[in-house]
Each structure stands twice: as structure tokens, then as C-alpha cells.
Image (cartoon, rainbow over all chains, first blue to last red; front, top):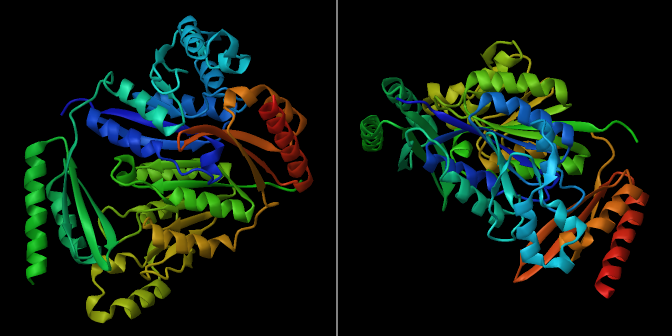
Length: 243
Length: 243
């Protein structure tokens, strides 16, 4: 198996930590990374505090191949992500000519306020990420992809950067659903996991329409292993239901 | 102002990191902590990997007053949270007599399989957290509250522990909604934030039924400050709409 590329996501937002907003961005990024063959190794949700943003990027920079952030790149006083990322990478935050002209074209000369112009301030050396929804761009500096927090915009930015990522073998998954409980399958499932070291097997109980059951999810980058392990799980389930 | 109590949450689950499951537990814990006057300082989503669970608890243990975990306490091979937490606190994992009798009463002697009995294994010295949904308990060891991942169970466990937490002054919030954009309010909002240091002011753009707007959320433990700052924000909004 080749190199496994890894990523971390940093959600920057007091509104998530206070419970005011239900985050939807993590799940979108997680799914997109699976498609790209990149493993999401960790997610952190942190407040809009400069020192925390800087130290979190510093820690994760060493640990993963890619960092993705969402939130804090709007025009108001609490939007401090761009300035914090610039400090994390020890570069200056400057008005980016292309970002300025995008904003100018969108708002017109009269409505390009100082607040809106703040959104053109990008760490020097960063590459812009287009924003097809409301123009103000995200950016990429080294391995760090800085995106908006508003889900529609974040999704467009993630779609854009996803195709540029260098990924490893794509992880495929196969799900076996049954109305057995976790306790009933646990022993035999452990034996199957022991047989298939390159297949990650997880079991997720559910309760739907009054019925208890479990989804057994197998994941692997080795398709033949995945198919055979899934066969073993199906045989086990049939055996247990038959008894 | 008195001591500000802080918390961190650790979501343990490959199913969240792979995008298979949309997390709902973070938002529930976040809201409950606000009610208790405890500030959620950070959330980490990590995989079901023993060394990562141990190091994450180690890092956060020093930083916050309370740790909450969700996920990984079921009966299958991938449920390694209890064993990992025991190692993190350097204590033995043992069958807990009370947990055993709860499971015995629920399942009956014949159906209390080895897999189910795994759920009675609790770090020595920990206190049980009742599970009114499916019996298998969570537990509290030192400052760390270990809860289930299934939302209905996690919520019941969180409700139980919430009333035992020592919190600071409860943070109150007040929201001013308007159909202005962030760019338009940014300058004056910065001035209001500068005036009210003990009020945390955030602005959250929305797009609903074809209309762009912004929710301005003020939070403070000092009610008089909150009321006056909210008055300033309302005045600002009325002034800007009037012009």
C-alpha cells in the first residue's frame, strides 16, 4: 500500500462552541476527503481567539499532510482567521490585488467599504480559493486551506480545493445491515477483524421504527480484502439469524 | 466576576471522521454547558485509537476543568474507550459489581454474554453514570465524564451529569436580527465591542427565503452590561436602516 495522506480540520467559531449553531461543515469535508483518498485524522473546534488559532495550526501542521479551516473570514471584528493564519506562518497580511478587484467588481466603488476591504487582506504568498457565492475568497498557504464558515460557501470552496489534493488509494466501504444487536455479533466480529488486518470494521447500532439493529461497516483500500471480509460478515449474520 | 469553569469535549469515533455519521452530540453538550455556566473551550474529534485517546485526555486534562467524551463504550471490538481512559488515568479496568448487576437484571443470566459483560468493565475508582435507555453505564473518573455515542443515550447521560457540575455565573445571550449585511454593520459593531469589554459580540450572516441578513449575538455573565450593549446594537441597527 502507498502513502496514506492525512488531514485535520479546524472549525473556528464561538457559535459552534456555545451551541448556537449546529456544525454541518465537518461532515461535508469528511465525505469529500474520503472521495479524494485522504484520511481525516482529527477535527478541532476552537474559539475565535488568535493565540488558540496559531497554536492549533502549529500543532497540526506537524501531524498531517493537509489542514482545512472553516470560519472567521468575514468582514466583522470577530473575523480574525486570516490575520491569525498569517501570524501562524510568520508572514505579513496584505491587501491582495486580485481579491481587491474581485470585491470591487462585485460591490462597486461606492459600496466597497473598509469593512468589505478587510476581506481582501490575505497572507503574503497565499493562493486564492474562489468563492462563487459571495466573491470574498478563501486562501491556501503551504498545507493550510482557509475557507468560509457559511456552509454554502464552504462547500463550494471545498469542492474547488478537493480536486487539487494529492490522495492515496481511495478507501472503499461496504455496509452489512442486520437486526441483530451488537452484543450478539461481538464475539464473531472480533474474530473476523483479527482475520482481516487491512480492513477497518466498525459496528454502529441503530434504532429505527421500533426495531433495534446494527450496521457493520467495512472499509479498506484493498478491494479484494474488502469483498472477502464482507462475505465473512454476511455469512456470520446469516448463521446467527438462522440459529 | 468569579472563576470561569471550562470544559472540553472529545468525540471518539471513526464514523464521524469518515463522514458516515453527522455528529449531533457536540451541539447538545454545548447547549447544556451554557445552561450550567460552563464554557466549552474546545472540541476534538478523534479516531478509535488507544494512543490518540490517551494523549488527547492527557493534553486536555491540564487545560480545562471538565472533560466529556462520547462514543466507544459498547460491546464490540472497536469499543475501546473505557480501556483507554483507564490507561490514561493509570488505573486498572475491572468488572464493576453494580454495573454487572444492572446488566444481569436487564439481560437475564442466559443472555449476559461475554460481549455484554465487557460493558461492565469500568476503571477502578470511577463513579457510574446511569443509562436509562439501555442500562450499560457511562462513568466519571476525576474530571472526565465518559458517555455513550448513541445520541439518545448520550443526552440522558449528559442531563444526569449536568446537574452535578460546578459552574460559574451563567452566560446569558441576546440576539438582534436584521436584514443588513455584515459589511454594513462592521465598523459600528467594532466600536460597540470596544465599549463593552465584558460582552462577547458575534455576528452571523444568514440567507433565508431569499433574504440576506445577520444575527448579532451578545453574550455576557453581567446582565446589566448585556442589556445596555444590546440597546446600543439595536440603536445602531435602527440608525442604519433609517438612513
